Length: 117
Image 1 (tube, helix red, strand yellow):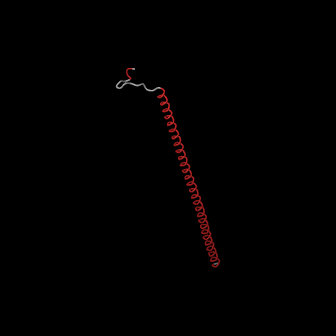
Image 2 (cartoon, rainbow, N blue to C red):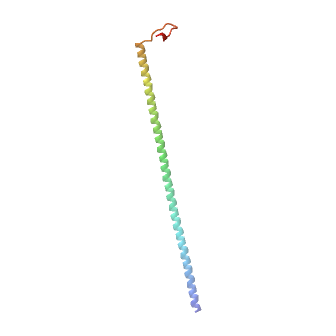
């Protein structure tokens, strides 16, 4: 009887040791699984941040290029406007000279004014 009880206790002890080993194995597996999951999530997050950074850089470059293009176009429009004004002034000068040559200014003696006209 005593031997039987010792065998049962031994079996129970072995069973508990097996259970403890199984629990430890499950914990190791869970830890390994969690580390893998965490590493994967961190890699995904890094990749997402890289894509976001590239998209932001591309947006900034595009915006900068659009700003430069707009500045160039506005400068071109301004230069064309100045050229147009210069052409108008030159044309007005030519017309004034032509008008002066056709209708010379009347001559007034020194000291007199046009106020009596």
